[in-house]
Length: 74
Image (cartoon, rainbow, N blue to C red; front, top):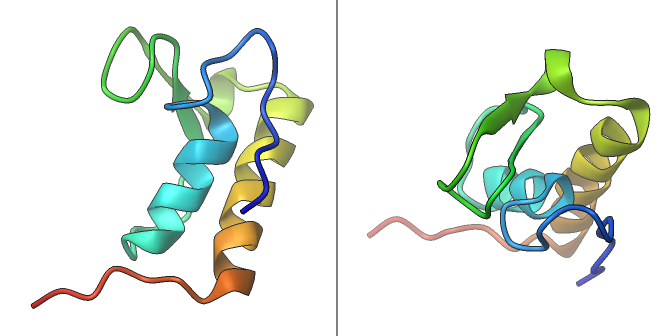
């Protein structure tokens, strides 16, 4: 897995992580990240993200899409 992250954003909960997780869990494409890690701090949606953050979310989504890794719901 690619680990693209921004030094100013948390790896867990950052845009790349959220894109990858959304794809893995079969959630809709919805760019966002958390300022303090997943579920912590503020949730920043697409309207509040800059071009690099949006690109990181897209890269996380594409990275997981390429891997084919998906949650298997029992």
